[in-house]
Length: 503
View (cartoon, rainbow, N blue to C red):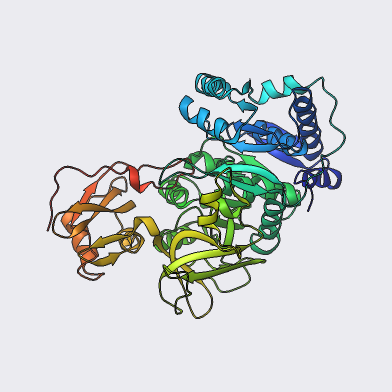
């Protein structure tokens, strides 16, 4: 597959008058979207951006992101998506790390963007939707799409950096295009009559591939929400007739929390939902499907895998708690610490090989060699297992394993039990340093509005359902849990109280 932006050209030719992008009262047809992206490409050309140059994108979930992104790829340059909430020093790092020449940034956070770009030696264009439209209004569209090969880098997406500085995963034109195509054809089965909810951040690979790129690939409408809010999401689902909802587990929990305030008919248009980014608690999946009457397909992937690696396929058995089977063109396996495949059912590290795997980390050959074997297997850092039917299950993150008195405890297993309690809306299990055991098990829990439960009651609830060494000895309540930009719970930011009841 050549340049990724040819997918937009094709949809503009096939569905010129169909709405491609919507954000409340602002909308673009596919013809308007393609023409605007082509004008952005002309603007970049005139600003000295050459094919292969890196350009940052520090923009919210609105059409301005999509237009700038497809203008960058059409020009043959490399997009560097960034969270608009980044501080100046973080902006500087992302731009300096990739050698970016320029940055499209939202005026809302102009100070951090401009300061960071200036420190990195990059020019800054501060644009919102109206600002970008004005910037390119008098420019002719770039007629040609710059030739790119499948293996050419289209996007450098920085990983979260849980173990140090973020690393820039190089995602290719071919990998991104095929991942979006497989997702629409074999997983979500999206078509031109679908309306896809765009509440996942477009600067994150899940929203970028499965939302924006996938909708463009098939000519579907992407309706955008600049910042996720559960009530707003249901209002948009009803208003725009959303058929496909894609989200992370905390979004599904939030939607459940406000469902009673809306008539059931508000979400009748929903055809299918997809969950990724983190493990979806089985209780949340069951409660959501019962409340909304819509199937959730859970999948798995990483920034380094474009992102989709496995999924529960709509035409096969779904297994709650499972991340499904590898998608078309992708292989997965579970290995021990020496890289040898483990016996079926045993836990080990998940490795992935296929068209979706990144080209490598930007300017980090040693990190690339450590992550990708000579024969193409990418080490995910996730602990999982595979059952007799070939379905994979995430046990936990390799680095979040708790070792209590020599016993391995996987936080996700305990969290699943906590979510079964009717008073719990969010839960995260963490290891607490302990002089005698090495680590003790703690749990930060958020309770549903109007509910009441004591820590001892929750502790006993879990104790009855897991082995004695696994239940949390310390439980404390929080208003909400810390979350990353996609809404994923960030365990490393959980604060453990100095003292709390223990058993």
